[in-house]
Amino acid sequence: MKRIYFIGAGGIGMANLERYAISRGLEVAGYDRTSSPLTDALQKEGAELVFDDDPSLIPERYLNPETTLVVRTPAVDDSNAILTEFRRRGHEIVKRAALLGRITADREAICVAGSHGKTTTSSMLAYILSLTPEGTNAFLGGILRNTGSNLMVSPASQRAVVEADEYDRSFHHLSPSLAIITSTDPDHLDIYGDEEGYLEGFARFTELIRPGGLLLEHTGLKLQPRIGADVRHERYCGPNASEQERREADWRPSRLRYEPGRLFFDLEGPDGLVIRNLELGVPVEINVDNAVAAAAAALHLGATEEEVRRGLKEFMGAERRFQIWMRGEADDPSKPVLIDDYAHSPAEVKASIESVRKLYPGRHLTVIFQPHLYTRTRDFAPGFAEALSGADRVLLAEIYPAREEPIPGVSSELILKDLQSKEKMLCLRKDLPDLLKKSNFEVVMTLGAADINLLLPEFQEILRSKK
Image (tube, rainbow, N blue to C red):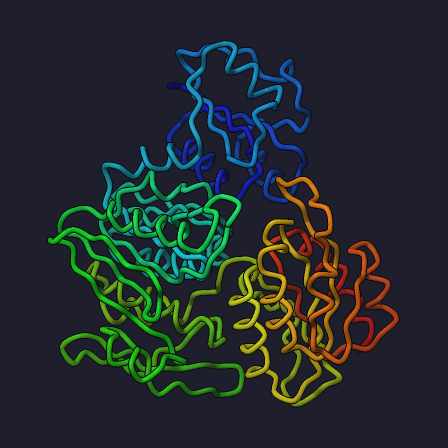
């Protein structure tokens, strides 16, 4: 194949494959419903993208089935006109996950899976490995702020760090040499049916670990791995683990301590290994779990203690993963704080709110939450309400539908009715800027996997004007 046409080209997971194809000298074109900063960046890098579902916009040189591969995302409906045209012409059409599986099949694949934590963990691990002499290749689910991209390419390396997405069972196309599982809180029940089906999906993923490989699993999961007899199995825990989990863990943090704007911990590993005074570049407690997993995997892969130490300290995080837009001052409520996080499950929302509370104790916390998907809201509304109740004030935007059609009776009110916060209200996304102008805020946090982040520059200007 000389060319690849991507249908759903603006997705974050598709973007790293487009960038990889361009780096390999292939021609890249594609379609998405709307433009975005990501599609703007891809166009500047050489991708020919269109935003109308019109087959006449397909460049003629992409119409030869013998030279053009077509890649689609599960979010694209089968009725898509461009997809239908390629199907009519007899093109090979594969899902994104299948192409990623092909690319990594002959590499040492380090695959990070989990209902939450996988983007930060994979990005952190990739950055540490990028500091080693051979570097690494990486296909990430978020834009790494250190590099401004979600792709790393190192011709000298046979490694590939992969964020292993469980949606649509995509991670079943992978064959890891080292697999990390960060969490298995139920999600995507529109695909898996129930929690049992979701856990079965992860169990199947563990079966795909190559002989002689390693499974690094967070403690406390309901998962029952089905690894081969010659696959090693280690566990890790975070700072909030129970005593039993700490005893079960091969890797654990200790001596967690905060200094103004900084967070340190010691890493304890097998055979008495201790690395002291590791510092997190993104100093929030939720990242300690991720750092333990990333450091353990990096050490297994040959990274030195100094490379691990430097990588964790320099790591700036992935965009939309606890991204601090305005830092404020911990002891001055007149200096507003603005933080954005991609948290879109009850466990993630709870952990994010708890992390902010520890960073800014005693400050009034407003959370703006935009639910993502009707099915997720329907399935987990009580959990979201409980998690969001950790904030002083909650502003709930309307549900972001993404790939879904509305479900009768499912709206943000399902969350609102069980919220325990003293201040709570529904607010249309378009009205949020005006609401910020009319009220006083100390710490503002936007949460969700939807497009609330597109309002952050405006939020930032509004809060700055209030100083």
